[in-house]
Image 1 (cartoon, rainbow, N blue to C red):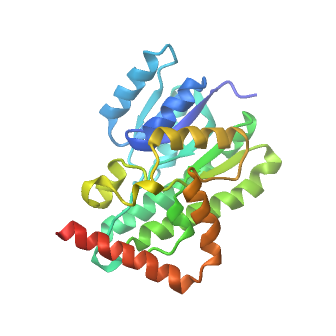
Image 2: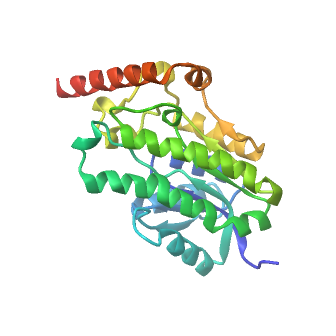
Length: 267
């Protein structure tokens, strides 16, 4: 039996959905380990959560794009006398624009965070997740259901998250580990600004949801052992209809939408 206490590890916990997820898990009694690059923001969130009477979260400042990030997280947890019961892979970013126009290093860093680090963290702690009857929440996107001309690398990375997480849901069920992939539509946040979208918006308001609503639905879905959570009625319809639409038509529709956005940003 492990003598390490169980915690919920949340990556990308310095802004947006990550902050909302941390608040939701803390509110439901989970002790947290907060992971992101921006250490000051993590400490501010840890102070906020501790002020509610909850245990002060462990703060782990690490760049997930760097090699051995999962090893560093594991070492930091061990030093704190903890191990994961839940892992929430929320960290990720996107880049708006044509793939060939992006800085190559930045595009590859997106793959490092959105795909490689998520995969590493999904697999690194399976034994402790099973030991504590916990689970894995991977934050994907509605983009994972679509081809993405105009944000090609980002859409492809989220297609990987969706496919990989659904497969893990099947593989780890026998060990008692819940795996849920959360696929929100656009959330007005720093993500959109980081991607290069004017006004911090990536899509019409009808597809958007607040970070708090997305986090709450993701938490409930994980606790219930659901394979997939798509917040919002309209987004659910989109996810259902997309496989029925010819791929060539989807490419045209998404490409046209991204072209209009780039034109608006230049205006």
